Each structure stands twice: as structure tokens, then as C-alpha cells.
Length: 450
Image 1: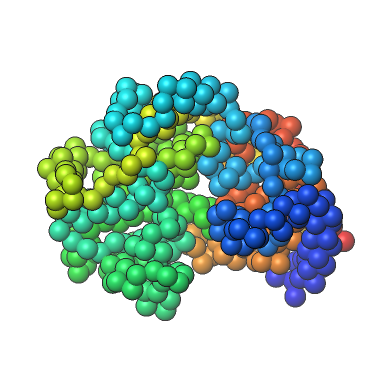
Image 2 (image 1 turned 180 degrees about the vertical axis):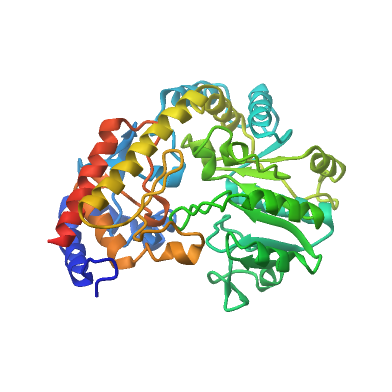
């Protein structure tokens, strides 16, 4: 079978050969995995470290800039940056200095610091939303936002778009299968299925139908899909969504856990979307774990009126280590020093180099494939047309192709990691780093076509 002009049997042969090569490269990691299996399910301390990859994990020793090393001495160019949680690169000096200085003075007090004020002032300035709160992750931010939206509107239903990912919480881990809302995995509360509607991206008629019953609290969406390759919104899509939500008394949430890395102030600012709520996560790409969410003045007033005091019926938000002194120090320096307009412009240049280079490689080999780009992010679209929906984008995630490509790149010193979420150049990538990725990509296609 040749779904893209490349023989599936050849891809499977590459996969098997490169898997053998890779396991030969990591004997010390293999031994550590055997040891870990005695105290960790799946031999990893967090399930995704096994679930996201079909090969044994490498055990990492250190990272710097765009690269990391494993215990066997292998060095890898990282094109996913821990799913953008390290979008600034590994161990950026400003972040490590801030962490050391703050940790030496105390990491967490369950009390505010001035760093937090500076961070929220900077977020308000660049986002347009005047009030902000911090959590431990984007998932936690979305959980709190959903509660706030339900209190503010007196409604229960959450509308999302196919291809979304809004965190590992019961409310959002749902999908539409033939018109029926089902859980995306096991162990989820059955009641969550009754509180969600999932519709195709870029489909305004479907949104109109979802809003028609008058029971929707919030439309939750990324500005563009980023977890199934990347899918851009149609021209005028968000302006029409904003009009429809306002007319129906529905709150609009932009989840920018990924897309804040693509443009200064996020795509909300770049595309003038004007949401009521906005989620940030992945430690703003710093490598340190925290999340945040912004809200309008009206929603902030609701939060203030329903303050939770010792579980007396208030709005259930907050966490013991949320907005820690350590986290606020990192948030401040990330925004002040690292996530500057100049840094975003440089990153966009690397993303353009990446996308243009991939499309040149495709054309030279007779493929009319596309490599869309936004900020430092690009992707492999195995068709002549860019996708408009998650189902169209899924065509390019053919498992035989993505797994063979990942393993080939891995044995050639490139960590592609999550195929549906990359490649991307970090803020630390150089032009030479991008050229290395392009060279390995060309070599993979030549091997697959041989």
C-alpha cells in the first residue's frame, strides 16, 4: 500500500531496522528501565513517558539550548521541547539564575510575592485581559475556568472542537463518535459526558446548532489546532465565533498552552480574538511547571464575590503550591527577559526556515506536500491542501509513516518526539540546528523512497 507514494512495507522495514539500531545505542538506558520496572508502572515515573513513544525511553542526564544528552552519551537535537514546555530551550540562563536566587530565599509560603504582581501586570499588558491567576498546569487552569464559567452563566454545557486537547480532566477528555459523546479513555466520570458537545473546527453551522439550546456556559478552544499537526482557522472564523457567543450569552475561552509560544502575547493578541478567558501553561516554555489564566473584569468580580473560605461553598479554585514564590520568580523573568518581541521574531525566522526547507525537500522528491508554519512551529502535511479540520489533518499522521520517521531521526541524532505536535524550533535553535533537521528529513525520505 502506498498512501502517499511511499510503500508501507518499506516503512515497516525502516521501523524494525531503526528500532534494533536504537536499542543498541542505549544499553545503559535499557538497564535503568529494568531497574525502574521494579518500582514504577511501565518503568517510568509518569505514564506519558511510556505512552507517547513506541520505543524504550532514553534516560536523560542534561540539556542545554536545543540539545539534550542521555546516559549512554548520545546527544539529540530536540524538535518538540517537551511538547513546548521547554520552548525557551533547555536551561536558559535567566531562568536557572532566577530559580537559584529564589530557592535560596524560600520556595513556597502560601503567600504572595511582588514577583507575582509584576508577572500579572505583564500578562495583562500583552493579553488585553486585566486579571490573572496562577495554577500548577494548563489542565488545572482549565478546570478552574470551567467552574468559573458555570458560576458566571448559571449553565453547564462546555463546547469544544474536534482535535482539541485541553488537559487531563474529566470535563474535556470527551469526543464525538457518530453523534454520541464518549469518553476518550477509561476511569473518567460518566457524568462528564452530559456536560460536553464536540463539533468540527471551522464549522460555524455546527457551532450555531450547539449554542441553540441556550444551555452553553463556555466555548473552549485553541486559536488553532495544534495537537493533530496544525490547523489554521478560516479567515473571519474567530470574529464570527465571538459574535455568536456574545449574542448567546456564552463565554469564550482561548486555550493558549501551546500557541502562546507562537506569537508575542499569543495568537489571541496576534489575531485580535477578544476572549473572556485565556489559558496559559507549560511554565510559559521555561521548563518549570506552572499554568495561568486571565479573565475579564466582570469575571474577576465574580471570583471575588465567591471566595472560598475553608470549604464554605465558595468557588473551588486554588492549590497549595500554586503561585509559589519559585513559580512567580520564573514567570516574571520569563516575561521580562525571555519572551520578548525580539525573541519571538527570531523564533519566527527559524520557523519560516523550517517550513520553507521542508517544502523544498518535498518538491525535490516529487511530493506536493505542505509544511505550514506559525512562530517556530511547522509540520508534515502529506497532501497538497492544508487541512481545515482534525479529520483532514489525521490523514498525515499515518502510523507506519510517523513511527518510521521518528525512529530514523532518533538514530540520526534528532528527537522528533510527538509526531502530532511538531516539529518546532525553540527560542534556542540556530539556523544551523534547523538545517540539521532538514538534512535528516531529506535522508529519511530518500531512504523511504529507495
